[in-house]
Length: 232
Image 1 (tube, rainbow, N blue to C red):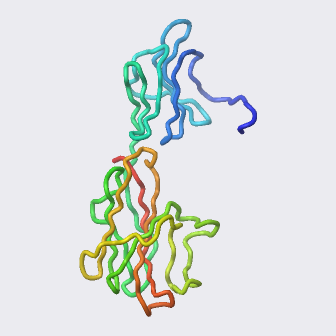
Image 2 (cartoon, one colour):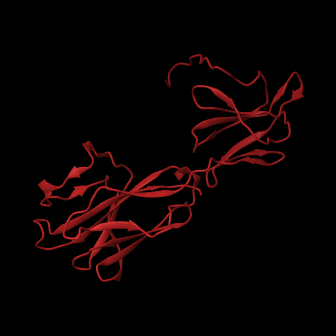
Image 3 (cartoon, rainbow, N blue to C red):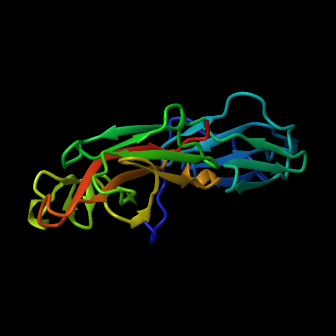
């Protein structure tokens, strides 16, 4: 709790040892332990601790080492040991993008990803908005589909002069420009970072378009899209 130490009972645990290496895996949220020695004999087993229990890793492990150094590589998501450099691979997460909700306006305004394009880290996610009435559209993104500040989502936008329209995510950035590609259609390219800390992270998209006279705000909104960032 940040004040006192307390004993944690676990169903399993590594054997008693000294000189082992440890690091924290940011993606999986576990502490990784490898090697060390017991009664002068080097050890070559590795374990992970998730705050509740210890679990031995499966698969190949580095040669036994009585005084290894472990470090977590944020850019790749790998735990690296030295000497006899080995790396523990991050878990695979399949990237996916899923539409949810409905847009408003005549048409209505619709947000869709290009077929076969998925939000893989280090790549680009391409999405289109269709049924744009006056050729001007923009994109907004957020990282929550349940709360915007203290208000629950999705949020009915009637009180903002947009009856029938819905806000589907908190808004971290707004009015990101989109490039027209054809009549009533515009495109946004979301360049995804190549960093393992975003594996399994969700980013939510929603498109907006100017539509003077349709409602008091003169704006229509699309459905939402949920991007699950993955490494495959």
